[in-house]
Amino acid sequence: MISIFKAILTYIILHALTVAYFNYTSNTSILSIFNNNNSNSSSSTFANMPSRSIVKAVLSAEQAEGRGARVRRSIGRPELRNHDPFLMLDEFNVDANGGFPDHPHRGFETVTYMLEGQFQHEDFAARKLWINLPKEHKMCEPQYQELLDKEIPRATPEDGVIIKVIAGESHGVQSKIYTRTPTMYLDFRLEKNKSVMQTIPKTYTGFLYVLKGTIYIGDNEFVGKAHHTLTLTEDGAETVKISTKDEDAHFVFIAGEPLKEPIVQHGPFVMNSQEEIYETFDDYQSGKNGFERARNWQSSIAH
Image (cartoon, rainbow, N blue to C red):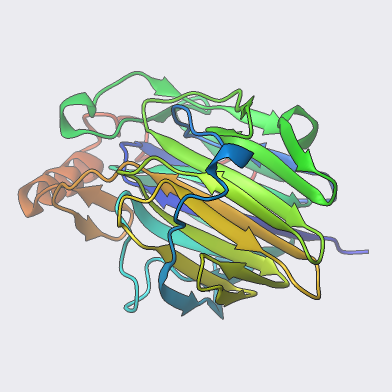
């Protein structure tokens, strides 16, 4: 029986330098994440505070990509080119032994959240990524972090509400992951007729991505349906009210401190200027400044 891998892939404006191949195999739950944040919490004391609402809803249309992959992309489409500090959001399913070919990265960090299945990842820097966000910290030491599903802490503020705290904090439960990037990454499962308040730092941008069911956001109960990315208002409100009605729902809540820096992107390279993009191409083609092993490197799991 061929099993299916399902995940969400988020690209964040950081610094990552690697040549990588992703290969997807069979059924287990795993989280491969390269980002985290500082603290954010939720409490019933915020119940009467105004909630952020939704600015835009973008449907993630399915398309073929890589080898044996079906991808739903929302952030990164013309309707939502980026959402600082986030560059791209993909929900994808991959057949067993499918994957994405060898490819370089520079200028961003990836977060892969496994929903079903398992995967193999390999890069020429011994499974390490250079991560950083602000321009002045671009050349920090590489790192790579993995968590199994059972290692992700859960918050259960009430019956019928389960929150996996992948990054950041929710209802007093803190993530185990730390990086330099101030980010929240929360997985919510709500039974029908439930409501939850989630705090968010007033300077953060954020969005929700609905995996299953229908949710209602804010005091005006904006309706969010499956496979839609819902961008939050940037009005300084520090809570988001999320409710369900006649069905269960599963969604992720992602937010972070915007960089407010120029973004110049060419394929898998994301820098601050066109000159830096030219320099990156020269580095890659010449095999220097982090790409020394890229020219002759081949993934052992891809071939």
